[in-house]
Length: 494
Image 1 (spheres, one colour):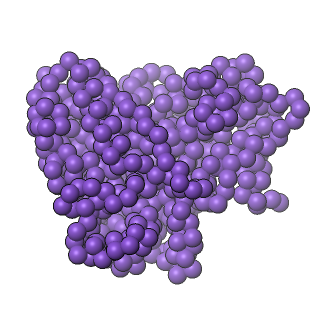
Image 2: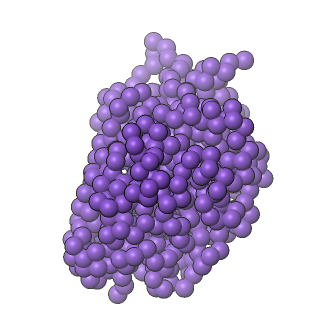
Image 3: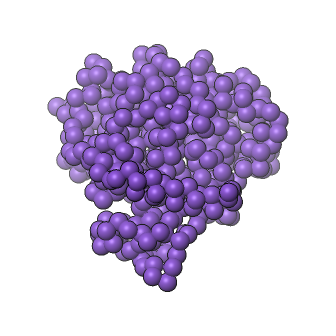
């Protein structure tokens, strides 16, 4: 029986899973790690930690599945997107810590871009907005701030990549490649022409020799060397984590939508072969590219979802485990007593794109208790998702039902509250590990083990559907309170 290893290198942990071709998980490995916060709004990771935890997770998944590397037909890789690395082409050693997608150090650079009048070009070429979230300003910061780095880049001595490229380079011993989904998040890629943008490279002063080759999401990405897992394994699928989740959720037709609740929250709707231009600060991005054909998506990104629960546990010490949030919400009957938490720890993402916003708790009284603050933090995830879906609706891409995944959706209270606030059905699949499953599906497709994405859609199975049950008057009252809380957070008060 054919087996696939999916490597899921995320923001807070590296994971690997071994799947069979029925989508069953045979073995799992996971290695958590800490991030580095050198200054307010700065977020980094040690590249060697990313690498070593990825290897450890892969080996643990093989052990858990009771198989050898020689039994694995293909590897699929999915990864945290936008996180930026630069390494020496000769040695493979990184010149600096990875600058994480959450990092806001280049906010001033984005304002200079706006003053330069480049916003329209960025939207037209890359489908993105001006925000520190994306890779290009992070790369420019590295080239400008590390002495001699720009000169080394121009001499062809360095490689730039997102995490997928870095892992591919290390696993294969020197292949410098990425896929179209990850390329589309750099702000250097023309998503219409499907090539690096000469205009964006010129604006940032980036030598094209620094960049990886862009391949389909289901394609050959070389072979992982035998020294890493015990035998050579071909790499046949690559996609950024949110696009991989779209694939894992079986969202292969225009209008099908998913939302992933991990460190952040990312809602995405398949727009087919149409590259939509958002009028409401959403992103037009590559959903996947298979057999040279590009499928696009409209996406909204929330920076703080699961990380807000992590803050409740590790910093505020209001819970002992993430699972405690559901019990807290049930104890207070979902009533926060007018308390709202706006978790803008590293700014606000879509549709606000405000890198300077910072988190607030509002509506506190002497009667406020711990469970209400915990519940308000959970509720903030639903409110932010509603903002994204409202923007999609205004852009002509209404979401009639939403498939959800990620670690947070094991929480029944949250899923029901999502359905209530969104006023649409929420579907939770039997397998919520859809990001890794999507990478496995792409690898199976690239290896010729499945014939089409449509065939792979049969791997998706519904576990539970949550139907909206909240009265519209209460829904509107809650959303109005959220909007007022966001206005307090951003300083935009009426």
